[in-house]
Amino acid sequence: MGLILDSRVVIAAERRGDTVERLIERVVSLAGDQDAALSAVGLTELVHGLYRAQAPEMRVRRESFLHELLADLTVYPYTKETAMLAGRIDGEQQSQGVVIPFGDLLIGATALSLGFSVLTANLGHFQKIPGLAVMQL
Image (tube, rainbow, N blue to C red):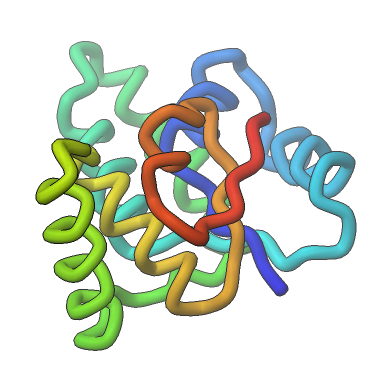
Protein backbone atom coordinates (compact mmCIF):
# COMPACT_ATOMS: atom_id res chain seq x y z
CA MET A 1 0.00 0.00 0.00
CA GLY A 2 1.12 3.53 -0.61
CA LEU A 3 0.42 7.15 0.03
CA ILE A 4 -0.01 9.97 -2.48
CA LEU A 5 1.13 13.32 -1.11
CA ASP A 6 -1.21 16.17 -1.98
CA SER A 7 0.62 19.24 -3.25
CA ARG A 8 -0.56 21.22 -0.20
CA VAL A 9 1.56 18.98 2.04
CA VAL A 10 4.66 19.67 -0.06
CA ILE A 11 3.93 23.39 -0.35
CA ALA A 12 3.42 23.74 3.41
CA ALA A 13 6.73 21.97 4.11
CA GLU A 14 8.64 24.16 1.67
CA ARG A 15 7.08 27.34 3.05
CA ARG A 16 7.95 26.31 6.62
CA GLY A 17 11.55 25.93 5.55
CA ASP A 18 11.56 22.17 6.09
CA THR A 19 14.06 20.07 4.21
CA VAL A 20 12.85 17.24 2.00
CA GLU A 21 14.41 14.88 4.54
CA ARG A 22 12.29 16.45 7.30
CA LEU A 23 9.14 16.16 5.17
CA ILE A 24 9.84 12.47 4.52
CA GLU A 25 10.47 11.91 8.25
CA ARG A 26 7.11 13.48 9.09
CA VAL A 27 5.37 11.34 6.48
CA VAL A 28 7.02 8.16 7.77
CA SER A 29 6.15 9.01 11.38
CA LEU A 30 2.50 9.31 10.37
CA ALA A 31 2.17 6.65 7.69
CA GLY A 32 4.68 4.04 8.78
CA ASP A 33 6.17 1.92 6.04
CA GLN A 34 3.77 2.99 3.29
CA ASP A 35 5.55 4.13 0.15
CA ALA A 36 5.10 7.86 -0.35
CA ALA A 37 4.62 9.16 -3.88
CA LEU A 38 3.25 12.03 -5.94
CA SER A 39 0.64 11.97 -8.65
CA ALA A 40 1.37 13.58 -12.01
CA VAL A 41 -1.45 16.02 -11.27
CA GLY A 42 0.13 16.98 -7.95
CA LEU A 43 3.44 17.48 -9.73
CA THR A 44 1.68 19.79 -12.19
CA GLU A 45 0.38 21.85 -9.28
CA LEU A 46 3.87 22.08 -7.78
CA VAL A 47 5.47 23.16 -11.06
CA HIS A 48 2.69 25.73 -11.47
CA GLY A 49 3.78 27.15 -8.11
CA LEU A 50 7.36 27.50 -9.35
CA TYR A 51 6.25 29.79 -12.13
CA ARG A 52 3.97 31.78 -9.85
CA ALA A 53 6.85 32.68 -7.53
CA GLN A 54 7.06 36.44 -7.27
CA ALA A 55 10.77 36.62 -6.50
CA PRO A 56 13.57 34.83 -8.37
CA GLU A 57 15.08 33.50 -5.12
CA MET A 58 11.72 32.01 -4.16
CA ARG A 59 11.53 30.22 -7.50
CA VAL A 60 15.05 28.87 -7.08
CA ARG A 61 14.23 27.62 -3.56
CA ARG A 62 11.01 25.95 -4.71
CA GLU A 63 12.71 24.40 -7.71
CA SER A 64 15.53 23.00 -5.58
CA PHE A 65 13.04 21.57 -3.08
CA LEU A 66 11.01 19.98 -5.88
CA HIS A 67 14.03 18.42 -7.61
CA GLU A 68 15.23 16.95 -4.33
CA LEU A 69 11.74 15.59 -3.64
CA LEU A 70 11.50 14.05 -7.12
CA ALA A 71 14.77 12.21 -6.49
CA ASP A 72 13.11 10.49 -3.51
CA LEU A 73 9.54 9.86 -4.68
CA THR A 74 7.83 8.00 -7.50
CA VAL A 75 5.44 10.05 -9.63
CA TYR A 76 2.39 8.07 -10.73
CA PRO A 77 0.87 8.99 -14.10
CA TYR A 78 -2.68 10.00 -14.86
CA THR A 79 -3.89 7.05 -16.93
CA LYS A 80 -6.90 6.23 -19.05
CA GLU A 81 -8.24 4.08 -16.21
CA THR A 82 -7.77 6.91 -13.75
CA ALA A 83 -9.59 9.28 -16.10
CA MET A 84 -12.53 6.88 -16.34
CA LEU A 85 -12.65 6.56 -12.55
CA ALA A 86 -12.42 10.33 -12.02
CA GLY A 87 -15.20 10.94 -14.53
CA ARG A 88 -17.47 8.43 -12.80
CA ILE A 89 -16.78 9.85 -9.34
CA ASP A 90 -17.30 13.43 -10.52
CA GLY A 91 -20.53 12.62 -12.32
CA GLU A 92 -21.96 10.66 -9.41
CA GLN A 93 -20.97 13.26 -6.83
CA GLN A 94 -22.20 16.24 -8.85
CA SER A 95 -25.55 14.51 -9.44
CA GLN A 96 -25.87 14.59 -5.64
CA GLY A 97 -24.85 18.25 -5.44
CA VAL A 98 -21.30 17.50 -4.27
CA VAL A 99 -18.55 19.44 -6.05
CA ILE A 100 -14.93 18.31 -5.73
CA PRO A 101 -12.20 20.69 -6.92
CA PHE A 102 -10.89 19.23 -10.16
CA GLY A 103 -7.22 18.84 -9.19
CA ASP A 104 -8.13 17.12 -5.95
CA LEU A 105 -10.55 14.85 -7.81
CA LEU A 106 -7.75 13.75 -10.16
CA ILE A 107 -5.26 13.23 -7.34
CA GLY A 108 -7.83 11.26 -5.37
CA ALA A 109 -8.75 9.13 -8.39
CA THR A 110 -5.06 8.39 -8.96
CA ALA A 111 -4.71 7.21 -5.37
CA LEU A 112 -7.89 5.11 -5.56
CA SER A 113 -6.80 3.46 -8.81
CA LEU A 114 -3.55 2.41 -7.11
CA GLY A 115 -5.17 1.33 -3.84
CA PHE A 116 -3.32 4.18 -2.08
CA SER A 117 -4.35 6.74 0.52
CA VAL A 118 -3.93 10.50 0.20
CA LEU A 119 -1.97 12.60 2.68
CA THR A 120 -3.26 16.15 2.65
CA ALA A 121 -3.50 19.36 4.60
CA ASN A 122 -7.07 19.76 3.28
CA LEU A 123 -9.31 16.90 4.38
CA GLY A 124 -12.53 18.50 3.17
CA HIS A 125 -11.99 18.07 -0.55
CA PHE A 126 -10.66 14.52 -0.42
CA GLN A 127 -13.26 13.24 2.04
CA LYS A 128 -15.87 13.86 -0.66
CA ILE A 129 -14.37 11.02 -2.72
CA PRO A 130 -16.14 7.75 -1.84
CA GLY A 131 -13.83 4.92 -0.82
CA LEU A 132 -10.70 7.07 -0.58
CA ALA A 133 -8.63 6.73 2.59
CA VAL A 134 -7.44 10.18 3.63
CA MET A 135 -4.83 11.18 6.20
CA GLN A 136 -4.00 14.66 7.41
CA LEU A 137 -0.51 15.96 8.08
